[in-house]
Image (cartoon, rainbow, N blue to C red; front, side, top):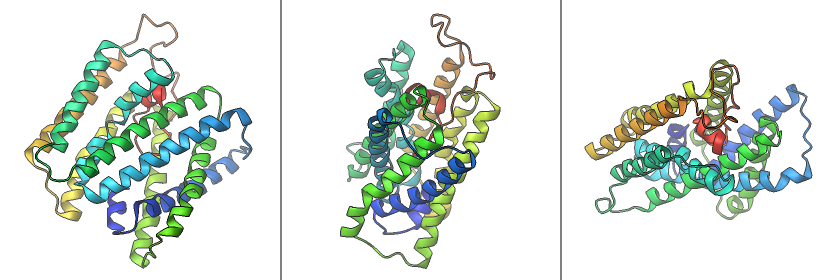
Length: 298
């Protein structure tokens, strides 16, 4: 998806957000219709749905801006801080306890991101700061998704509301600074929406066949794919500090995966995930499927 976003060229990030979510809204609407889900929402769920949509929209726009102004792999690596920001937002909103090893991994993940950003050596830190803000917003978005899921709101309905909200919210800004895409840019924008929706459906099916803890670690392979695609499509070659940051972030994610896989005998409300009780899949508002962490925060 991020490759198509960058290939779309100088289209404003807000406009790219509209096209990406318009396609997702159609796909989610079809899924709801096929599942015979109604399009009505309970009034008590609207505040959380709105908060989830605001945070998700901000996170997406920040990500699109960063992808356009940073190395593709660097932007992706910072975006992968979302699961760790989700832990923090869950502590603030859901009052979920942060274990000591989780706190240590959050600090290590932040250190890895500093190797990627290289403050003091990078002339323009603006895009990186914006991506940090976007990752933080996405972390809160996933926490609200978790709350809505616990309330029994169906996942397709959350996706549809978010996508429709995002499209409507950005229309006034698009009207003030609309850039007419040419045929090639329009094709790239459509591919962005299709890639995001297709990836999300693949993730959804994956979580139906295996526990979340067995799948989430593979999401961090996106950093390596982004480095490869950045080199092939844009001639981007990260420096050695960025590669060190990527390696440290992946190692932290692996440690999180291993430690989270161990059953928490001290918490009787969270039985070991043996695959017989799969958790809900990640939400397509951001393509980050680190669902087991986003679920607890998501």
